[in-house]
Image 1 (cartoon, rainbow, N blue to C red):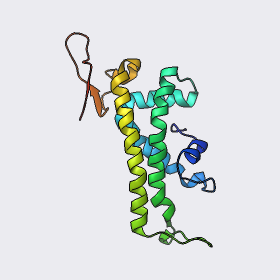
Image 2 (image 1 turned 135 degrees about the vertical axis):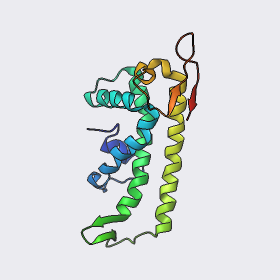
Image 3 (image 1 turned 45 degrees about the vertical axis):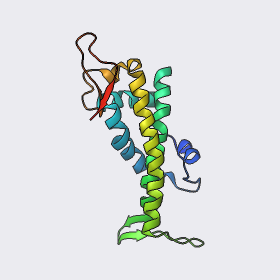
Amino acid sequence: MIYFITEAYLKTQTPITANVDVKDVTPYIKTQSDLRVQPILGTYFYKYLLGKYNAQTLSTDEVELVEYIQPIVAWRSAEDAVFGLSYQLKNKGLQVQNGDYSNSVTQREVIFAQDHYAQKASFYEARLVNFLKANKSLYPQFTDKLNTDSDIKPTKSVDNGYDDFMIMF
């Protein structure tokens, strides 16, 4: 299953270079999609949208929403990969990567890079939340009563079932 981004997207939209084996980054893509996007969308809507993305049957509005999701997954995956590519768990325990013509970075530099990428991802997460707040009526699966675990939930009202705003929990 593809979690909203392709290898090409990851390598052209983040500092992850072409010589990085995507197999070393792939585990972070699903994890970050699950950890960061699913709580915003809610499980019901997340699974719906992910299924349509993989079947390539997204509506125009859903394509626009995915364009808000993609940089989140990409930058969060890059953030996670900084640690995972710097330190790898091998059969002899945690190992530091070192190349012929390069030097490993310090733990402080790894943390700095992670924070730098996390700031970018946080910006895109806020944009996604704002976009959903403004356009929730375009996504009935998002406001569906089955979508019970979104971090941003429509608030019930007496007249039409939902108010015009969402709240953060």
